[in-house]
Length: 295
Ligand SMILES: [Cu+2]
Image 1: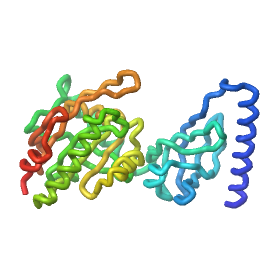
Image 2: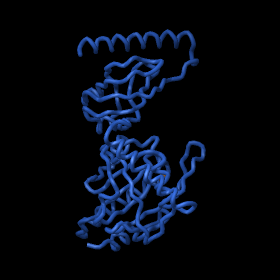
Image 3: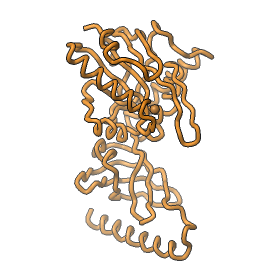
Image 4: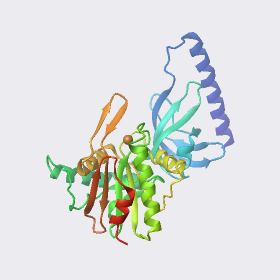
């Protein structure tokens, strides 16, 4: 390993020097950073240094298979585990330093396989429902499997026997009265329900923006807000699976430039899996929802 690390350091140094030279010769001609898809295994998590030791496969036209020390942000670091197979973006910064972003379980991992299989079923289910996939109050919720803020597979079927409060948000939502307010209300429901002695409540927020909201990003979102994730899960997964859920739960999304515009709904699911109640928009009262919960 030491020889290997030395090699990497030399590599980084060479890359940094090359970067300097290129930058000097052709100012502004080079993009600030280069992004490549990477597949590999986390060998070690070095939390204090903020790096992962990753054994990665060949990146065609860029780098042979090798073991590297790669910097990661605190959000990804929090959910990284040695032994996990991952896919991610390998980013070469303008400074020549390599880091990993957008870390997901690799397709070959058991997590990704479970999520992909469920996504396929959900796709067929949505397709079968034809032009009006929307599920009314009283109908059973679609089954799905997504990844939570710790990278674990969460199956909707797991929540049978529980009361579930579900909504859709995204972590970069810039509109204070939309997602941030919705999350604040969910936190209030969680607290009030506990105070009222409701023992079987689960809260679920599914991201509207899976391209950005990885398990690690959701982990950071919950951590920054001090959210008790014991019965409050933040879920993400394949874009198509999220689209199917949005269609079935009747949420509209649309990009206007860089901004993701969306509607909001808060859905209460009964222990038998049926949609018991829903409110559209951001004007809902946590206390009213808690009154609807059976205890
Ligand atoms: Cu929003």
